[in-house]
Length: 327
Image 1 (cartoon, one colour):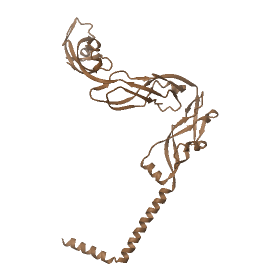
Image 2 (image 1 turned 45 degrees about the horizontal axis):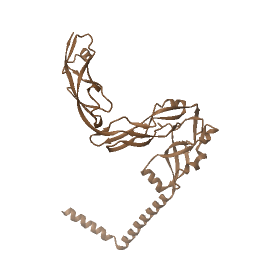
Image 3 (image 1 turned 90 degrees about the vertical axis):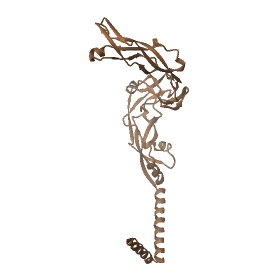
Image 4 (image 1 turned 30 degrees about the horizontal axis):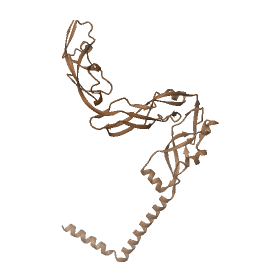
């Protein structure tokens, strides 16, 4: 307690030693410091700076009847002149810019110089952001024989469904095939083209939408058409119990093989509208005696070797069966 009283007394004495004139001078000094800091900050954010960031490139005005292959990565570094405030925002919320490169100059040479396209590139940016340089400054291309082929379209989706709903049929795309044109090596390596991912939540009706096709990062490939209509059948699901006879595989060399039980019950999830369509003849359950020959197991697991599309086996009863073999 005595220590606290002494400390309070010392602080009061120190405050009393600072008279009104001194306090006024201190207040003026602090105000000047704050004003100077604000003035410096205002000057800093209003001044222009050069800021470098990554940019992905796409090509426009491709030369006709000429296939080409870029000899460098599809990203470049752009140096942009902008205010300090804009540069601060770029640092707080970084992103990758996108720029278009005009390839009309490839008609007479195999390289493109960014220095001659600065005006074209700046038209792709806001007026308060001016591109002053691009690195590398020159893009080189390798020309090869151009070829053309048709490839199938593959729809990619990430859907979640309402309870008891799901996909009940094959996904269709219109068109089913698209034409790709480009260098022989690149075209030959593409077996199919995927769509952009189709997303949806709590889906309970058919999905019908238009999706653009993914170029697989091959900017020198042209696609026609560049999009496809995607139709995904969605419907209500239910469960059905189907009794299946168990077939025996690899039973040659034995007089008889007896399975106990000889039938299993499969609980199947399927579409409500297909409830009466599927029966036991559309499914197949087998056991493989090789498991006993090779590993000496005492019971054999049920293997489903035939299940219709868009049907899912929920459970099997039993999952394993006993057997008796007579040689």
